[in-house]
Image (cartoon, rainbow, N blue to C red; front, side, top):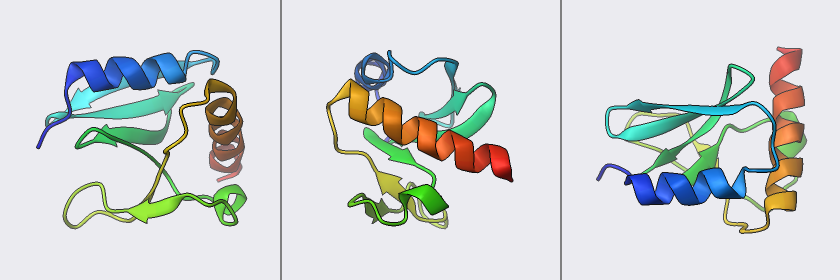
Length: 97
């Protein structure tokens, strides 16, 4: 089931504190970027982020975004400050690669 624009708008509102956020629609879903680096997406109206070293000990649960894909982590927080911290940690890990 493709994600809807209303859910994307909700996620972008949660990400309002994070600089450099953009997105692209792809096959009914939305890929999320921070400063041009893919960090997650909206899949079936779920906000998922890539797994990373810094998030290994988090309480985020693994989810498969679509059949055949690598597991990602489900973000279930509605706190923009928590989400900002999470994305910044993840982005630092992505920048190290």
